Image (cartoon, rainbow, N blue to C red; front, side, top):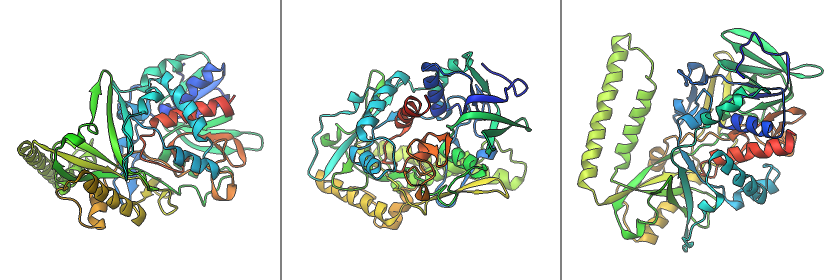
Length: 472
């Protein structure tokens, strides 16, 4: 039930940080197996009026991190993002399971993917397709549920008699004592500390990292933050429509939208091309999206100065002029489709999340490397050869390709590396911090791969596994 900081107890069996997608799953699964005395804290509210607080803004040195990629409120990112799903590849999951950097092997992963159906996700059979593998290309099926899955709809569990729920509560850090762990948090600038037998961090990737960085627990700070991943994307050209493309373009049937992504068959990279109806010029699309990103940064800011006022509205005018131009050329070239490239970013120690204590700001530094760019270029060329087509406005150089496909896709993963060996990972294969068996991390932060599979379904599967196997 909802409580205030005045009625909170001094100790709980379970403390869950974050009432988003992962936190609500962990809570629901704990209640299913009869667990009691649970506290769940959320920095937002049941109906968040300010879901993107300024203290959660992320600063990026390379690519833009969208402000609305971190929703603060019950239900988390499910309130704003669609329910598009895909399953990670067997080779990818088993590779990291065998190297002791991921807790589940593929057969176990599929077992828990099946259990996500209880939360409204597609049946695993829906990701199968009859498309046979080509000589050099393969396809991956994506399924979107409509209407979108909103984890806010499961909020009735917050009123369970075995649950204390407190909103507008910002988790600051975990404090280690001789006999137990305390979660320190603030509510309306009031500071509180409570004990938890088990503490499960279920906030988003970047917030989980920040909380760990500020905590006084035994943790590998040299590794913490390394390996941040995302799915940068962008338009890479347009081409004449062809009946061969029909089976790849998105289709709507009942409460599902599906499409097939095109991948390189014999490659260690999982980039994919998405064929969409319409006509787009890559550089024009890129500029319009960057202008849109600039406009997003002005949300909620009153233009008190004349310079700020002029800058905001010049950007607004430019954006709409470009959008009008895009609509005109799309109408003229009605018989075209355009290609969108989704890039996989591999785990790379140089791609990092960092926290600056002096100004309480989080920075992300990541980019596509030569390996990712070469694989992306090969995929585009193979697509042209296989379909015997010519892509208009195709990027001529890796530098251009990198720029055009640097638009952020907001699937934040990595930064809290999972592994068997403490010297090169932050958490163990039980998803608990090495040396701290009662502090768990669940969500995208622990993944050593991104794989260009919309990961929400996999996060929920991992949360179910954690409760059933490690939190009983």
